[in-house]
Length: 150
Image (cartoon, rainbow, N blue to C red):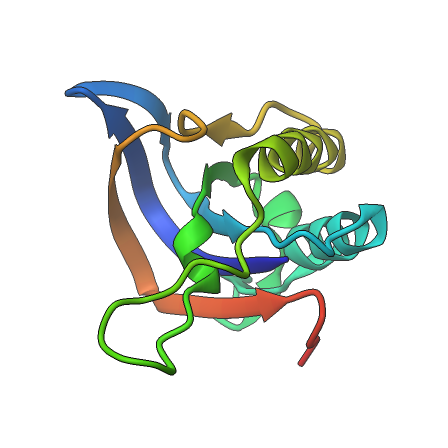
């Protein structure tokens, strides 16, 4: 499982010109899945994301998590995180899990995040053509990979 994490002041996702998910300050997550992902990958990622200390404390030091800061989460499924560009100029998506595998993983990921955050996690629409807008705060942008934790 791969996630691009962006600390945001605000973020929204639209489908067909209609906002389907929107948050103020918090985390925008772009989440990708592969066939090999299991419950342990989801659990690791949820724990890492909800405990990641990338929000400023009273002294301006990144010392608080999204939970500590009372931030929201907007999570968007994004198969393109598993693009391979080794051959040619057209990316291959062969490592990305197909919808019948990735949709249940994304739904479980969202449920686990909601439980850990203690309030609903906002999402896009799985499989839709989405437009994501954000105000990146910092900017702070990280990539996390459950198979290659750094």
